[in-house]
Length: 144
Image 1: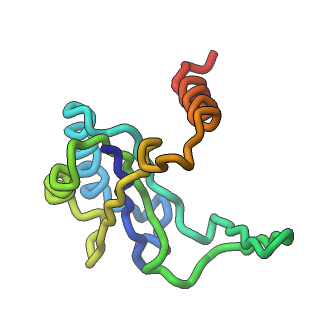
Image 2: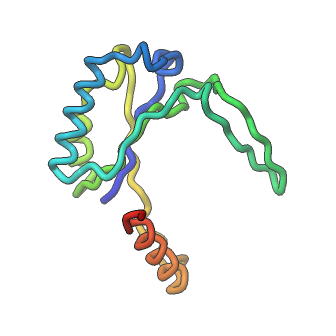
Image 3: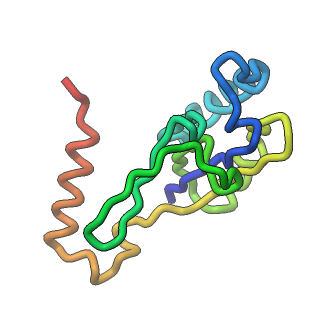
């Protein structure tokens, strides 16, 4: 199963700059990412800049509203993510236990399984399935 592992933002992460990032945590995360990659678990992963650099799009019917960061609900923000390929939620939790703390203070990560095509049942028509498969094959090709 694939799962998204989200690093929840903290007040610390929201005020970070490239100059204030903890080099020991960065090194520990690098070693953890290397272990994930060697085990074939890591599919993708990135850290996100603070929400002051982000924007949101609010949808209401046909109208769209752009909202500039920073966003104040820090506990609802995401500071980074991994995409993992694991056999089960138990395996994901085992890896999460091995994860270095993303920040010096209290913090948390969240693990959420991704939907797979099979999860959509009859809502995934043969045409939709073929289109989705073609899109994934296109994305998997190396770019010239």
